[in-house]
Image (cartoon, rainbow, N blue to C red; front, side):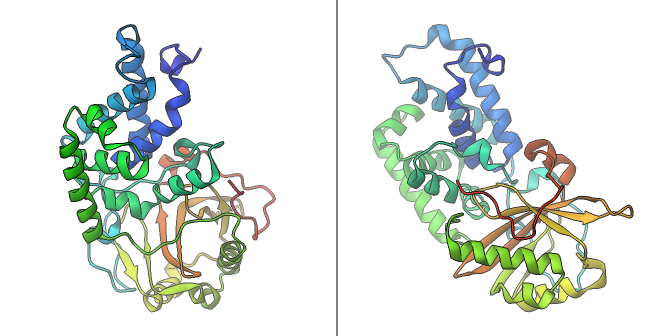
Length: 332
C-alpha cells in the first residue's frame, strides 16, 4: 500500500500522467506535485463513494485534478518566460533584481511527468508538450480553455469525454477548443524541434556545445547558435536575443564560465544540464539548471535557472564524479 495516496495502491499508478497534466496546467513542477498529492488525497477520501458505472477511475481522477488546478489558478497570475516580461536587453545592461518564483514558468524533471515505459511515439509527443515554450504558450489561455486544449490536443480525449469531465456540453468544449487553438496560434511557440535523444545529428550538436562550453571556447560556442537565439536567466527578467549580443555577454569578464562543467539531467523533454562552477577549493557546485532548445541543427534558446538550492529539492543533486564532457542524457 502507498501511504502517499492514503494507503490505496489503485491510485498510485496514475501519479505520473496526472503530474504531467497538472504541470501543463500550472507551469510549475512544485505546484504540479502539490496538485497531484491533493488530487490523490481527495480521491482516497472519496473512494467509498466512487461509482465505476458512472466514470472510469482514470476519468474520475482527472476530474478531481482539473478541479484542484482550477482552484489553484483562480487567483494566480500567469507564469511566463523572460521574453514575455520585458524587452530584450543590450549585452552590457545590468540584470536587475530577481523576480518572485510565482512569476516564472518553472522546469520539471522528465521522470515526474513522462512515463518511463510508454509507447515511444506517444512519449515523443508527450516530451514535446512539456517543453518550456509550449507550457509558456499554454499559460496565455484561461484555465478552462487550457484544460480543454490539453485534454483534447495533448491527451487525445474525445469531446464528449471532456464535456462530461467539465460538466458542460460538447458544443461548449468544441467552441473552447477553437478559441484556445486560435490564441495559441496568435501567441506562437518559440522555435524548437522535438528532442530526439537517439538522433545522431542532435547528439553531435549537443556534444559540440558541451565541449565548447567546457573549453570556454566562446567562438565555437556562439557558432552553434541560431542568428536569432535567445538567452535568459530566471529569476531575472533580463534576457538577450541574437548571436552577437550573446557573444558580447559571454565575453564579459564577470560572465566567465571558465572551469565550469555540464552534467546531463532530464528536464522538460529537452536537452538539459546542471552547470557546475568551481569553488576556491576546486570542487564544483551547482550554479544553474540549463535547458536548451534546438531548431534547424543549431541551438535556438538557452534558459539557465539560477535558483539551484530550490531546484535540487525537485531534481536531486547532480552526480559530479568522473564524467566525460561528451556524455549526454541517456536515451528514453
